[in-house]
Length: 389
Ligand code: FAD
Ligand code: PHB
Picture: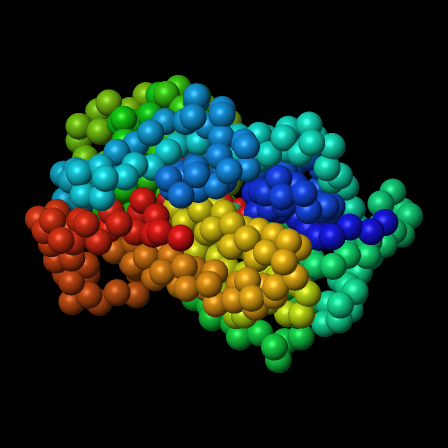
């Protein structure tokens, strides 16, 4: 088989790139190691920046998002038993949208099927060959049979544990990493949201987040230990702990119910530079990870893909490599802004076991300042709604 762009991974990054390339008449094939159903069953992001909505519109997959997504004009930060609203619309003129990553993925998969663009699911043993030359190839096995795709470019959209970044010689990558001493325990439940907007909670017992997927479905998170296990967290314990971390009014209004999904995610900051080696370009979690506190992971995957699409389209239309040569620097400039913001939100809101009493008081002083200062709120809001492309 031959194609112009071989895309590794059918997560949001790979599927969105495939759709944008298709809209520019650039042939592409997606290889995914899991089944389509498995990819759709992974509950992950839920908060979409306005810029990401624009890109989804450009890709022709924004219709259902505009119909079913919930537009949020602000969030609440809870500490010291009080909630403080950050009004995005007033402070920045922008809003964010609640629309699940699974829904975006479903919309992209359907659009891809309608366009007749090929995706090969359940592939094994993907290996990238001759990425430093002009004629890269991708080898894989499907149903035990080895196959090969010859292409002009490879897009590594295969997430943090994927093969693409690992194919780049170690000496050609610089890795920056921070692992946080806690994780997030998340549940999904068929219950109304705790409050109309997201509540980020900083509490002596640990961080909590009340989010949602719709007006009848809640997505809730608790800071937990790194060695914690979901068996230790029956639903009753989860709801009890959440109430303890919320302010009395929010706690009193909670509607509890059985969880329909429960998982623990570790928190990590990670960047691999540069995001290109020869004809291989990395995008999304394959190149970088942010802790979920700033809701930036999926949104960064979308901005990487937007830059990469522009660069590939420029090359295919004009033969110019300027966009491709500038891709890594352009994407990384935005990545590092999101890394800083996600690290800061995480540091501000979580309980760090190793912090001294002095550092704990500084953390509280920063929260008090945020609650009082319009300047501090604008800095948060500007980053949260998404920096310009
Ligand atoms: P992935 O979604 O990881 O997709 C990569 C794909 O590649 C997968 O389908 C995988 O199966 C496939 N793959 C891997 N290896 C191979 C291989 N060797 N061959 C072929 N295929 C392969 N982000 C936000 O913006 N907002 C949020 O609110 C938010 N909340 C989050 C909450 C949680 C609990 C978590 C865990 C994450 C959250 N994120 C959020 C982050 C977001 O989910 C990720 O950043 C996003 O999924 C990245 O998309 P991606 O396509 O780059 O990678
Ligand atoms: C989510 O709804 O899953 C979500 C929202 C905001 C975050 C992280 C996750 O910061």
